[in-house]
Amino acid sequence: MSDIIWPTGYVPGFTDNFCSNEIIVAGLATVDIWPLLNEPERWPTYYKNSADVRFYDGKGPELEPGLCFFFSTFGFPVNSRVVEHVPPVEGRPARVAWHG
Image (cartoon, rainbow, N blue to C red):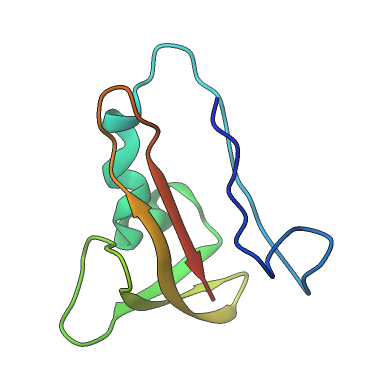
């Protein structure tokens, strides 16, 4: 399993807030779930605290490096920008991260 690469200034314990969600499922490949992670409009279909997904500048529905988007979680508005985006490729871990 790959470690989370926390950017300088965002290391847990040294920020106002952070979130990391992970789960390990035997026999499930990253490529199988990538669309669920990489398309924020799908998030509310499996995570009830995600809503109101919107994209800026005619972008979306998939995340990409530098993309700005909006969603709310627990009713809290989050303007976000993708800061890390590495799609799944055989032999290399996929990564997606955003700042909001």
